[in-house]
Image (tube, rainbow, N blue to C red):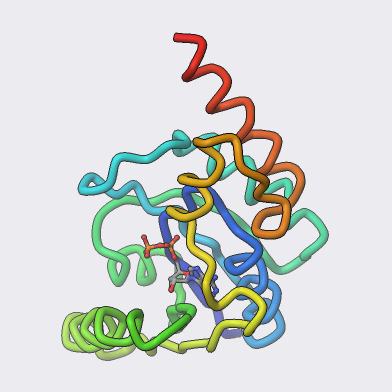
Length: 163
Ligand code: ADP
């Protein structure tokens, strides 16, 4: 059985991420979406909020589970028995960083392979940061995230401006 780990910040999850989740779930037997507690990034959504959103959005995928983790991705992959790390590649700009990450991981954990899925062209420009920026100015993000995430973004920025 091949277990895949799809790690990321998912702050918040976008249609681009969900496309990678859906396609990865058809490649591996079990897919774990690993939400990373990244100390170098200040997140808009808390860890429980991020995990809950992805769980709600992937409920129909029987072989997908969502968990949080911190520390090294390869350590977490070993912990959950994953032999494959899934990553999405959007543009050339992603390539250098992703290649460096994959090669470093390969040295640290030779038994784990990184598999890249090229982004769906529809979502190649899409990032969580852009979505947050648009939402922070009250812009319409319905083309970028599912309705549930759009709603949570509205709530988040409404509660922030009420402070
Ligand atoms: P990280 O903080 O690790 O970059 P992200 O949540 O930004 O986490 O992204 C997680 C993974 O999803 C990365 O491999 C990233 O390249 C990929 N990804 C992000 N946005 C998209 C998108 N629009 N289409 C395809 N893959 C994407």
